[in-house]
Image 1: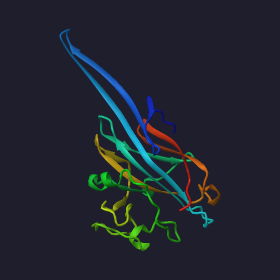
Image 2: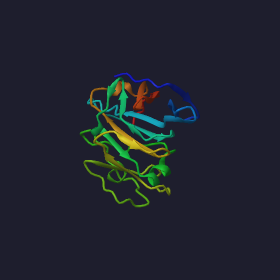
Image 3: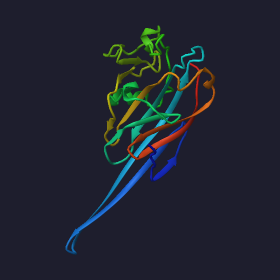
Image 4: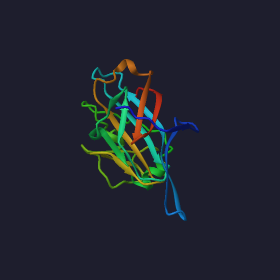
Length: 213
């Protein structure tokens, strides 16, 4: 499925993109009452990272991104693709708590470590610092990652998604996503890959260099 936005503009650094689509509606009764409504759908995506474990022949790979609704309408983030392959919703791990997300939106996301099945262990399970405390617990459907170690920001509580993620205007989310094994391989470390993130027809396409965790 190919999606196109009506307008694309890049701004700032850190792989930031803002994508818009517009609809103008004019209606009237007789000739005396008119109403004009400008509806704008827009998402901004930044901090995109991808990692591939270059010591595993399974092709264990993950990605992360910060996504904001900077338009005027509620949106549903519904597509993440890498190399043209859709990432299943069940492979998305999302934090949309606005306090935690706002504190971490500008952070450089980290990978921690993966287990033998390719699942991220999170900060606490790998001996990292999780401070200040967070109420969620690392598990099969939750990943807890502290992006600033002993710093003041709350750790992310990334919950497994089951479908598109809705964002009201002005709100944000952070997503980590597990790339299905085999789409990437150890030789991809250091290479450029294209990531697509969409909310309906508004979307971002970014070429990003894959890291080795």
